[in-house]
Amino acid sequence: MALSFIIALLLALLVGISLGVLGGGGSILTVPILTYVLGMEPKEAIAASLLIVGVTSLVGSVPHARAGRVRWQVGLIFGAAGMVGAFTGGVVGGFIPGVVLMILFALMMVATAVAMLIGRRSVPAGNGFALPKIILDGLAVGVATGLVGAGGGFLVVPALNLLGGLTMVVAVGTSLIVIAMKSFAGLSGYLFSVQLQWPVVLAFTAVAVVGSFIGSAISSRLPEAALRKGFGIFVLVMGVFVLLQEIPALLST
Image (cartoon, rainbow, N blue to C red; front, side):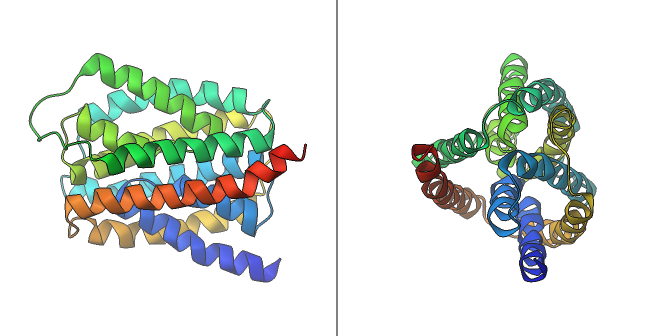
């Protein structure tokens, strides 16, 4: 357990860097780490990831906000709608078998990665935003986040870019506010049915927060096209990995 915990903490640094650079990817890393490295049950891993990613995103948003890379109006509207969906998803997720949640988690990652790699065009900043679509998308993404602990940045960033008219870099910064709001709402839903290992979760969170500052410091130096492509490839690889781990378990039940 000691070695696996040390490995998990090292990987937690990558979780924070991912959130700081990409505005997402935190849950994509956190859920598999907690499940496959620390041996948590899927529901506990999902609930823990919501806390870890929520706190890390909130702290990591500070450098982005100071640099002017957060659009508060769009972010708060999207986040408020997402909180409603996330709480609902968190409550419902407590009644779904863990292996099913993990497969849903992976399928969501693969579908989103493919959509990003196909090459949806970035919407130029300053074009305004579609309020009804942002609210509906926030609700849908919130349900996904609450249900499987994912659907954070890798869905929010493209939505803010396409519906909110934000550049990729600003969408990343704004997404951290949205992710924090949705994560805490989803966690509150899961806590009706899940108990967390608080010392482990808090240690993981502290290391991830450090990583988020590193990620925030380098995020503005990366070109948007490379950021989008790298994001899509990363999500696709992780989604396929989780599917390969979980489908045999489902078939054997």
